[in-house]
Amino acid sequence: MAHVSVPMYWRTIPQRYKMVGQKCKKCGAVNFPPKGVCKHCNASSDFEELQLSGNGKVHTFVLIGAGGAPPEFAEQMKAGGSYPVAIVELAEGPKVIGQMTDVNPKDVKFGMSVKAELKKIYTEEGVIRYGFKFAPDAEGK
Amino acid sequence: MKRVAIVGAGQSKYGEFPEKGIKELFFDAYKDMSSSVDKNFDPRQIESAYVGNLGSGGFQLGNMSALVAEFVGLPYIHTVRVENACASGGYALVAAVMDVLSGAHKMVLAGGVEKMTDVSGMKQKYWLGVSGDTEYERLAGTTFAGLYALIAHRHMHEFGTKREHLSSVAVKNHKNGAQNPKAQFQREITLEQAMKAPVVAYPLNLFDCCSTTDGASSLLVCDAEVAKEYTDTPVYVSGFGTSSDYLAIHDRLNTVTLEGTKRASQSAYKMAGLTAKDIQLAEVHDCFTIAELLAYEDLGFCEKGKAGQFIEEGHTKIDGDKPVNVSGGLKSKGHPIGSTGTGQAYEMFNQLRGTAQKPTRQVKGVERGLVHNVGGSGGTVSVSILVR
Image (tube, rainbow over all chains, first blue to last red):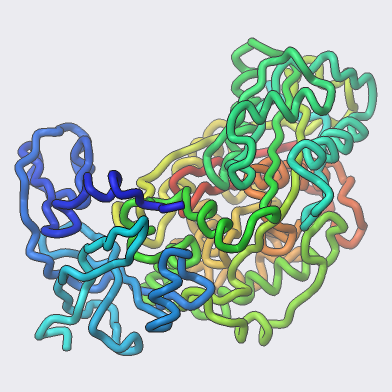
């Protein structure tokens, strides 16, 4: 009953591990996660790969409580309690959703400066899934 | 536009019914619809059926529209299951209207059904999570409560919307639902109860979220030219609009606007030759309390950022100047996913004809109403305008 099956997860390894985005050759805007056609101009699918810095600012955030966690995150909830999830506006422009880590949930703030780190997300189908989470950077601490 | 009419509408009771599956629930709605037609109803005249449904917990995903149609005595017709997550019912109505407008069929059923309580809590969360952006939003550890909470928190941050405003939506809708004999939760709640409920995804708590529900609804849609053969008081679909949006909230240009709602309503207003000011009554998609506040703004009932003030001033109460969700909304009436959109139209049909079940919940003199149905966190939206 996996939500993100192993094959589905595998296809996004460049995004999970290295935050590889797309720079549109027509309009110059950056897409992350990738699109078939650039979401800014809706006119081109001619991209160059762009590795994002992982730096960004918290655009909005929530604190997921026991009733709000998907079943595959129940283990994390049991072990660590409520966890913060944010939409982060990355330095290169795109926004992306991710969990916050290495931070006291009550210290998360709008506009907080964060950096992506490669972390274990969860284990499903016997396979550990790694991906990015956001931690306060030097400025955000 | 007065080219398409609704001449009958029915709804099963919403709630938890261990003895009923999708077939039986759909039959309840169908029987209720049949008995609401004033004269000359003949099932053999129904030429097609559009049935909103997300997946009934995964039990009958294939050919479910043919199954529920034959169960109620409608074999050998054109049937389609319409799936756009929580907006499936709203899109089923639009599909029926387009079918009639195309001239392909004169008498069409638009309905919806969902069976949600048969499955375990864990499986429900699995099913309910399938309509957002699975690859990123789900893998960040969120369900829909978390996603709407992301919108709510940003709305509070940008516009000063307060927790009380969110809870006021729940209190209002439970007050309305307490009067609705077909609602799942026919009881009022206090502001204090709503404020102090356990946190699901801060800033949203348990009373900001709708429940899981079994239920079905059904509408009889026909060419306006023949409507008077069935009733002296048809309800007309004078405008409709739909719009998709980016599924993931992080992909949207604006976190605090459902662009789909804006675009769908603007199309509907234009077709009907009306503006937001002309709407006298609305059933909007309040799957979470923040969703109703967003609807006030994105449907044009108030300015962007002013929804908190709008509910505080009482405009949307049953005795206000723009009553919203007099049925109790998804929050109190219940949210059987595939049925929600046509269930909203069922309420509006009765309000427009003055046949709401109790005098206490009948809004007087309504001539123009709007129904608004949202799929997922806004990935799909349908709006229809119903008039006398």
